[in-house]
Amino acid sequence: MSYSFRAYRFILQCVTNRVKNYSTWNTMSVKEFVNGKIAGKKVVVFSKSSCPYCTKAKDVLRQYVGKEISEGDYEVIEIENDPRCQEIQDYLQQLTKARSVPRVFVKGKCIGGGDDTAAAHKNGKLKSLLA
Ligand SMILES: N[C@@H](CCC(=O)N[C@@H](CS)C(=O)NCC(=O)O)C(=O)O
Image 1: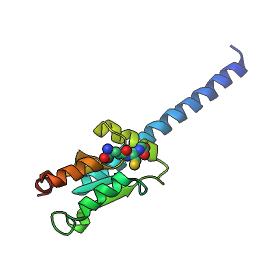
Image 2: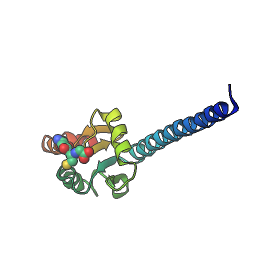
Image 3: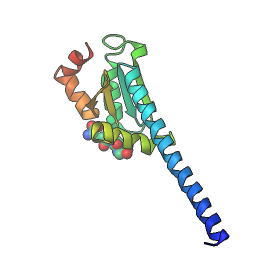
């Protein structure tokens, strides 16, 4: 085997490993980010500011803030300008079977999107979930 071929193979291996490590690290950090957020607050919304379903969910949830949800226990994460937006949505899909926004989490569990949040508000389930 020629020296230049071995050198070429070595460089190729290094590049491949770098790409693999980078994507593993990247996936891990998105997972850690999302899991950390979900575990950190009673109510967490992954949202995009221009999305009408997100506005619907946020409008509903706002009514509970200061009552069933303390101000510090509510977080909205607007993901559209996050460079990891696609990966966050991919991971949300793994977690919740949907990658659309909003994804609303109550006590670590996904209750669905904007329509689901509005329906749960209407039928009283949201209030009992938040209790
Ligand atoms: N029925 C869903 C609809 C959600 C939906 O269609 N969201 C749009 C944004 S308005 C979405 O996620 N589109 C794909 C994307 O932004 O990646 C809900 O109530 O949450």
